[in-house]
Length: 166
Image (cartoon, rainbow, N blue to C red; front, side, top):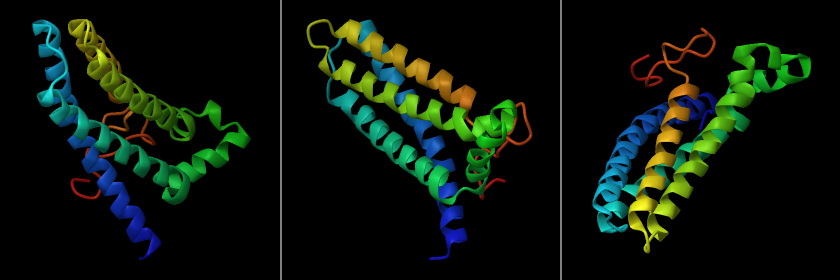
């Protein structure tokens, strides 16, 4: 397969999965919120949201790492700029460090939230509340560190879905 075609395909898939994650996070947040309010232990309904959320999160991270280290010319240029003072440039710093580091942290937050929700059998309300808070922290981090069309710097701005709507 042509390298450019593979890059474009993975980039579009990375964008589409971002939207799928929004839906899955909202579902997991609702389950954590309702579990906290009802002091309900982790159950099959929770698993129905948490399992796909963690799978899609892991796939999204894998695609992001492939883009970052293998295919993306933007990420390659940003990494190369680090030796030449790229940390002073907010666009280069975003692509070289901030986006990747923050998204790895989001993956950790999602996994820890799931583990806490699932293992909190003695005090389920506390576990569900903690999972909800961790997910909300992850959502805030994603909202801040995702390259949106309205991002502050032009070099960071990206369409909602690459290759489909922009």
